[in-house]
Image (cartoon, rainbow, N blue to C red; front, side, top):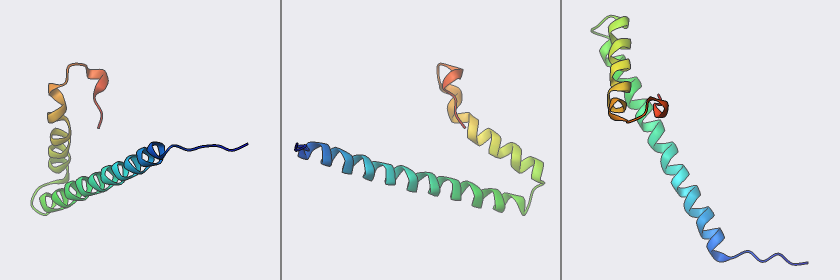
Length: 73
C-alpha cells in the first residue's frame, strides 16, 4: 500500500512553519523590548509605577475590541 502525498501539502506545511518562526521571533522581540524598556524605567521610577505603566501599555490597545472575552495579555 502506497501513500501519495501531494506537493501542495508539503508546501503548506513549510509555509506554516515559516509563519510560525516569524511569530516566535516577533514575540521574542516584543518581550525583549518591553523588558528593556521596563529596566530603563526602573532606573528612574519606583517599581510600582513601572508595573502600572506596563499594565496600561498591555491593555490599552485591546480596549477597542468588541467583546471582553477576546482579551488576551
